[in-house]
Length: 241
Image (cartoon, rainbow, N blue to C red; front, top):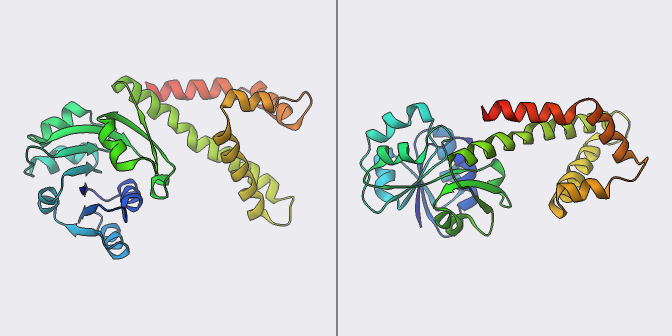
């Protein structure tokens, strides 16, 4: 496909890296000049263009803009009938995007993660998930959401990633003070967590690690007694608003 990326921040750059070399013609905007230039230098199928030239060259246009400035940027561009627009902006719903890009079609809102650059990443998506599946699967997995409220709940719940990384990082720091190779210790914990959660559901894994008196059970019970679960639920509810 002919794909265009308006805005070339961290997430948009990761998406481009994940799609480059897969047969698409990719155009990125001059916004975030250093990133767009680096992408064009790294990949032969990526070119840099001004915003209107990018729109003219693309069948599917991804919006990696700031929600508060998107309307002003998009109102200065001319879209055409038959184009598909996919937004990365959590702060703008599909109806708003549709108003900004007429007569093009606001196809979907998707929330990618940096891991999409390597593949194997989840993608939260609302709207035309079939189109997104054609572009991103099977290298990644598109999780289709029902409505805006469900997207909001997913956005809140995905924030568990940062505290989970903090938890593993702190355990790695603790381990690093006690072993000869701290970097190996962190790599071990990261692999342990990711492989274990990939292989089974959370409830199943907790039960498998619930040996009475075992290290896993003892640490989990200690942290639960300290209010871990209540604190998490309270924090997620505040994010959901």
